[in-house]
Image (tube, rainbow over all chains, first blue to last red; front, top):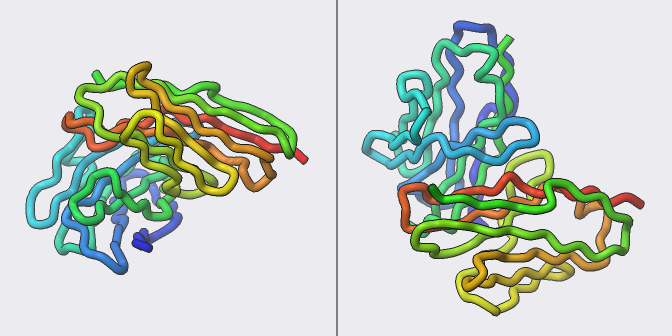
Length: 116
Length: 111
């Protein structure tokens, strides 16, 4: 089956620093990847849709200058949380779309970000 | 605005019980409904439902969609402690958001 990895799985950083999270589709090419954020006991919230070779599409309320997304290749998308603050602490999950079918998303294992 | 509502929000059952989880939705131009199981990490895909009245089964899990009444149920029979998880329902519409998630149902199965 399709496998998506994320790195790192867990990161702790200081307020004001930037953190990069990688999302890779390991055995398939993904034109489209998605970035979600999940707070404890809450549902997944779509942050942005990342398309290879073009700018990401951000959901309303998500600051694109704070959450930089780069989809440099068909197997890699990165999310950079810039100038992180404690309120950015969360669980970030990416997914990759298989074969252009948006229902067939395969999720990465997630990255837990803690900003101190 | 597209909306997906799951109930109950949480549920505690004993091993061997049967549970039914509910998902209702209001979306523009519905295409599919999906169920995911989320344990400590990211969700894993369970079912995709597109047509009304056709039950999907996988072991002790089954699910069915009612497009007239706009809901789906996920049944788990003979529950085991390993079924403890958050079950997420998501809907695909032809709107801009590829997946609209419900808040999930947290199922706890106790021995």
